[in-house]
Length: 248
Ligand code: FPP
Picture 1 (cartoon, protein in one colour):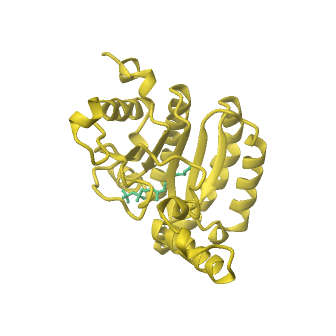
Picture 2 (cartoon, protein in one colour):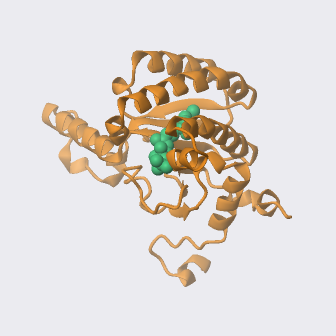
């Protein structure tokens, strides 16, 4: 079997890939286990995907780990996810270090338990001088929250005179998003056969290629990432132009 990794065009690796990791609960149910078991298995998929992303030179990988809406889940599932996050951050820091990975977050981190924030900050500090893949965890994140926050800041700065409202345009607006320093993802992947965006990076994916796979997140491995990138590399990105314009 020829591997997708070997088929990739090294000059066309996306700089930024975003993933909606979905299907943990269904994976667990399929295996006759509690939903939390699926989340646990999902950490293995995160490890393989992060490794694979680093190996082929992706610069930024954003993982949707916990949405604003996920706070509505049963309390025990939220608590299990938070404990798992703490455990995963702690146990993965060494291998992230070895793989030269940096860590950052987007989302309403103030909503996260102090214990998770402490672990995250310590991991972020340990990895801050690394120069390889930038791993971005979206935690307590939703796009509508992010856009609303940006609007609030812009209004405040306009009122105080720091910002001239005449200067507001899309380029300025994106400086107020939590992804201000990142290029937009060229590719968005969603697992588990659902065709939804679920309030993820709505502004940033305006021209992203979307890739959906039936695989449930706990079954996803780096080879699946390479397959998605191979698919992406064989698409024509026109950004509203015609094919002919792209050639000339
Ligand atoms: C969606 O599956 C997944 C989540 C809400 C949590 C994702 C978290 C992890 C993979 C574990 C920790 C992550 C890191 C970054 C270490 P679902 O529960 O919605 O699945 P379902 O649609 O089958 O119910």
